[in-house]
Picture 1: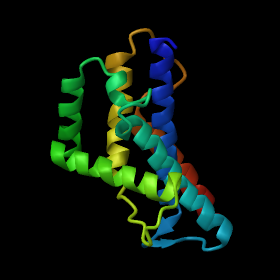
Picture 2 (picture 1 turned 30 degrees about the vertical axis):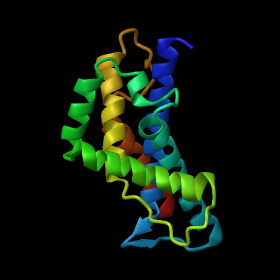
Picture 3 (picture 1 turned 90 degrees about the horizontal axis):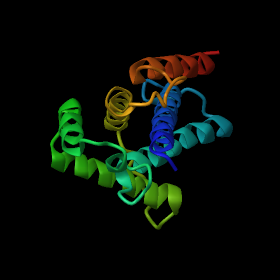
Picture 4 (picture 1 turned 180 degrees about the vertical axis):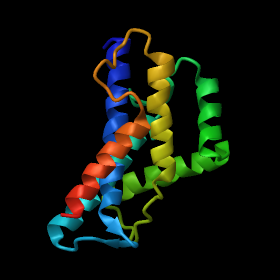
Length: 170
């Protein structure tokens, strides 16, 4: 696989993750699910599971082919800037990675013996993926491998969030 193909796939994963975060959040209002029928509960849970799996591919799976360190040229600059963007320490980010992996491993990939799922807060996931996506477009895309991609992660997120809210508010 060429570098451009890998960059493009990482960008696609970023968009999949952001789309699923926005659709998951759109299903909630005032801390409660908008629709409580089994179809909507399942769909909403699936949005959560997919966003966590996609995020883990980007930030939690050091051996995965889409892991951020395998596509970013200046790893130290990216990581320090990411932490600054997130306004957290390296230790806090490591803890968040572990929280996301635990949810993925114990409740998505396997249904272990845990009785209670601790659903990770998604703001760090959203911000980190937005930062990665924008960084790819501004620092890594030297050969225009994203010609038809959204130009900014925040614009993409707003668009898919609006779409999700429209569906839930019909």
